[in-house]
Image 1 (tube, rainbow, N blue to C red):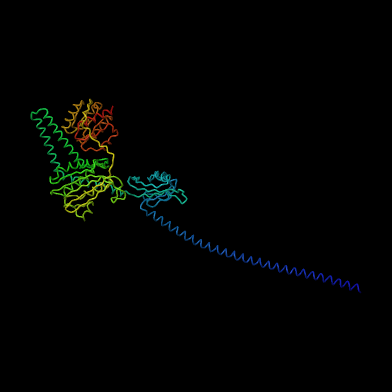
Image 2 (image 1 turned 180 degrees about the vertical axis):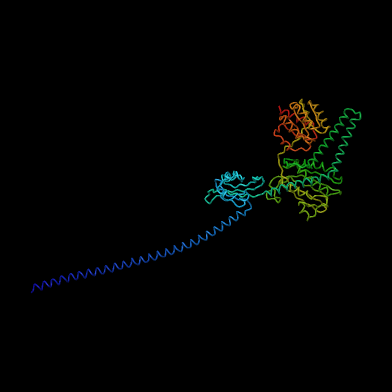
Length: 586
């Protein structure tokens, strides 16, 4: 009994131990389960947070994409509008526009370009000039290539003939197209049609020349009576001394004196003729170094016969030379115009015209707008009636005149101002009513000046060659034949140019030189020389003209065998010219 009880107690104790162990294990498992549940709750919470954040990011991205799409749509609309505006500007530009790549292929042209060259976009885009040269004449692409190579803009004017023969003038402005990274993309060009402008300028220039010539002719008309008076005096000397030398028995010394007087009168007539031709003729502008004092001296010779004895003409010089770079004839016209106005302002009253020359230094930023440097100042003053202050502002305007109707063209002073301005000079006027007027001219002064003087003091140079002399005036042919024969030449003369050609054709190698007047009936001197040079291309020739123009020298390609001589002949100059021709020919 006792053992059974002990065993039962032992069993119960063991069971209690196991139950305690189970309770402990259960407690541990419960604790671990709660721990795992807590961890699971934490993970679940974190997942919820992550999911929430993900949804927020997705929502933000969706909003951003929506805004970006909206902005892109807006940008595309603006781009489309700008593209439309740019194309509108290109098509309404004042000229022809094109844009080329660096390999000179057309990338863009405007409608005016297409219309002018009668092209379609598909026929030109992606092509070069070489691809289209057989179908249309385009702008020369060498200039496009130069802009691309140099990366600098260029501008020039061109004359262009379309395939149908129409002539156009264009002003082209080309620029290189460079991006923000300095990469060269191509070249763009704007071509402005300036055909109408060129035609207008040519017409305007022609009208200005006509107006200028008209004004000179008007002034020459005013000088006519004085010129006629001078010529009558000269002819009186020539006729009188010649008649006495030929009809009266005189000693050799007196006869020689009379002949010298005839020669002096002839030279005065030559100088007067030269002044008239210089003043009146229409000629190409030829700028050179000229002494303005010499020009004034020539003007005085033309004015002297027509100035009333009551008007004194005085020249005051504080400088010995007044050299500028200009055209002699234009400056002569300027001085004649102002001096003529001066004596007309004085009229029949007693008065004085004073012309003074001084040197003036012009500094920078002067009121005249002139470049800094030395200038010649010419003051032309008169003691005439003067000009009212309110009229001084209009005096240089075209068609302004203070003269009565039919007394003047009103073109003079506007032409004068234009001429002075063209030589980078300045003109101004000061006047006081009933006290006179002063015109002040400023012209740039130059230092170097080699004045060419005609050689008239050397002895006659002799020769022995055969010469054909042609002039339609019998007295001239007789004079030259006698002179050239006297200095050794064999001379054949002819008063008819067609007859002279027949004489030359008989033996083109007989004559060593031909001297011909420029203006003759039938064949002119130029036409005669052209025909003669077909027969003998190398023959030395001299063309004579009272209307000398340096451009005559360019009429024949071999200018070394062509000389120009002014009429009336100076015998010494003629002998020198022949000597030069035959020396060069050798």
